[in-house]
Image (cartoon, rainbow, N blue to C red):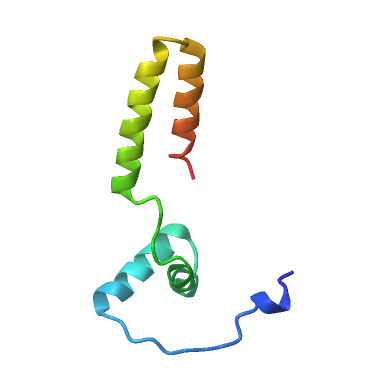
Length: 90
């Protein structure tokens, strides 16, 4: 059960573009949640940390680190590679 402070008790009407509304509805349908939950999530977390471009950069760094580490320790390189791959899973 939720704490009293976590209950949503305030209702607001929000105007948005048709494109934003469709994007919210699409994301809600993909994730199997209500559009209201998507809106609240976006308001609480406006700047997602793991954008696709950041993930590509991270993967490039991880690949380089694994390649360099293999020269010294195959075991540690495999461990680093496995840990980097875990970040791709949700």
